[in-house]
Length: 316
Image (cartoon, rainbow, N blue to C red; front, side, top):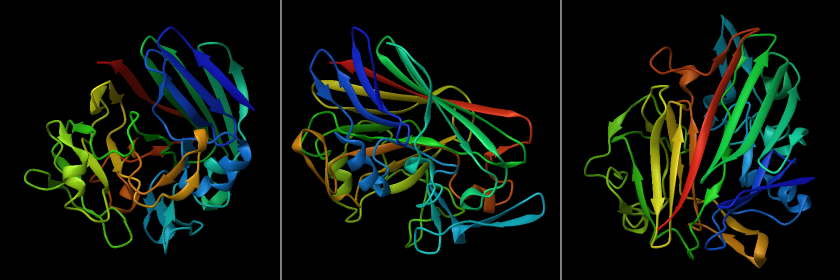
């Protein structure tokens, strides 16, 4: 089932399958700024691309699909070379039908219960996700509670494009000059570098296409703040619209859709590599295996963890 929320500025559509954002429309221009699908059958068919989905229990990659918590080693399902990506490709959150807890013209609240051991993660986990309109912003919020210590690191995996044929001519600004390199399997390494003078540098508004021309496989890297403050993390704009992304999550992953491969989307579109980009606010990928160097997404037994991502969409 799908739910529509709208106000004078924005209109959004949310599917209960994968708690997926399928449409995010600027009402003044009529531009839909996210990739998506017309049917639940297509959402499930292309679920591996995570287009618009809520991904978890852990977004991004966990090296060798295992981690240690409280002295115990947990082996997870493998779905990305030898690693686990976005909580697994069998029972990850993007593949699940969520329960609608609330739906009105301004907010949709969805929940999912993940059993102890699902995809290898410990704890019976209750997760709640909300999509709420506030003026010119769409706020994605989430919270979780578990009966065991566990990892809880989810995000919204929307692919953004401000109405262009590709993202090449759009301008991107990221408010940090630190990023983490990856290995040949896109696993984030235990290292932080400065972006200055590299194709990863978006410290000022920069043409996405100009930087990607120097990176044949695109960008699939974590940008590093490592603090839990409310902050502006990224801005994307063209001559009509500007998207500002705020969050209290510590980092953000930039993915320039290199692995899109002809998915059949809404409006009769076909999604090819470079069609859009993802701005995935998150915890440091694979940080659970890097000791205490980074803020860790550990949800303690009986406690609650919550975060938000706010997408502000402005007409220029």
